[in-house]
Length: 221
Image 1 (cartoon, one colour):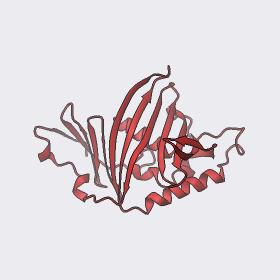
Image 2: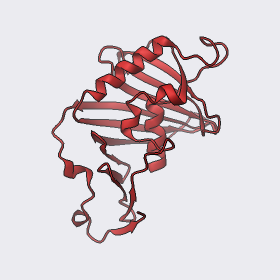
Image 3: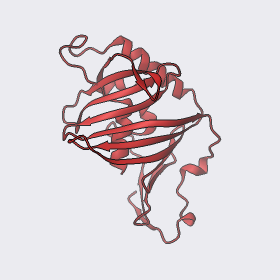
Image 4: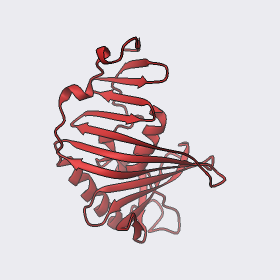
């Protein structure tokens, strides 16, 4: 699940497809950058953020194999994601990945390398370093005018080759994303609700073992 979330969230604000027919091979679209910069600045101005989302997996044959809802809390370098019977807690130093089915939690040190994706990284200017991007024509998403950005990673060894990022044209906030994998599968995340500057306490980003009776702790630090 952690891999899926990382892929989906990062893809949400990361990748964009640009090829020889686009605004110059190897050059990013300045209009797309304006949209990305505005969305990044909007989120970075929040002290906290609470969001609800829907995750959908479509197989290569076009069938929807999985649809699940989740929530995310974010405060500075801290975050918490609840999704499909699993929870990820991060207090900025340690990360706890809890699986409800096995009643097991893995604890590890935060990895700040370029190979890892966190919710915070999705809302910064990561896109200038790792992706090419362009602005597509506006679309309607859930009845709202939406700007669509198409992205592609510089690293061709990534498991995905194209990502569509959707930004609400009025609020300048990310409203969803779709990731196209090389195996034909498609992952999409739609933001259903967003509460900037919600009342969130620091203890919500720490795994409290007392609240999970009998949990098995696997410490990888």
